[in-house]
Length: 322
Image 1 (tube, rainbow, N blue to C red):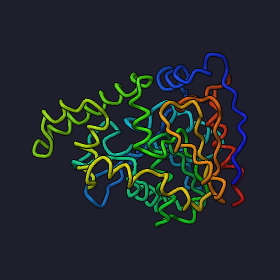
Image 2: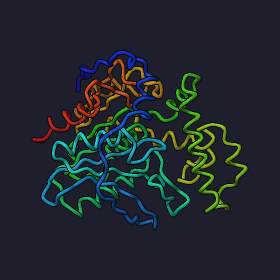
Image 3: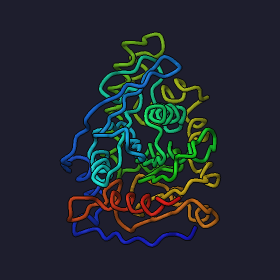
């Protein structure tokens, strides 16, 4: 598909990527809350928690939302997107990845950027419940990578999945980690590291034979955590093996579901591989939109809805006859 022209124009100080990213992540207030929660029991003995808006057995369309690294279903960007779609008559399901709902999961493993089996379990659960005719998927950041990998794997994708949107997505995990480790991103990498180490410390108390306090203390970077925990806990040889096998860049050309990839050019988390123009030009299904501004999930507008929320709804609704 041709590269899409964007209509987004960042207002005033929000042309600055850091201001936009930080404001959207920490200061934005969204007048929305989920109504119910479902616990999905998984075949490996673990569980996933799913937040739900008001929904009706008679509705035939649902949006499934996937959050980013160290996030959860109730982050402002998740609530904003949920409100946008529910206001337009969609049922909404917002996934908490393993250990992200406020209760630690049962197994030593948790979640990672390529754990598409968990997304499959969620879709199966939802379809058994209500047999939706139309399912749309939206992923943010690491959740966007997982979403795109899922679609590109072309395995067990139900015909009811009609469209998808990935926002602020690192398509090459290793390359984006290098960007995140740059000095300009110190405040973000430090925050991620602090949160992930806190999670690991809790996990260590439940699985002391798997990882030691000393190993956690010595983790001074996100790469170190992926070496010590993420890769080993999820069956990868090392961090490099995890990045290679789970980066969605290797799956994009296989996507056969209409999909929008929305990545701002000034997103300091992203590498050049996160703007796959040549792949998009050759694809019949991958649409690429790269606004000049927007930071990392910071597409702020003067009205209450953010641009990426309006854009996701418009893209998905345009395909409603598909």
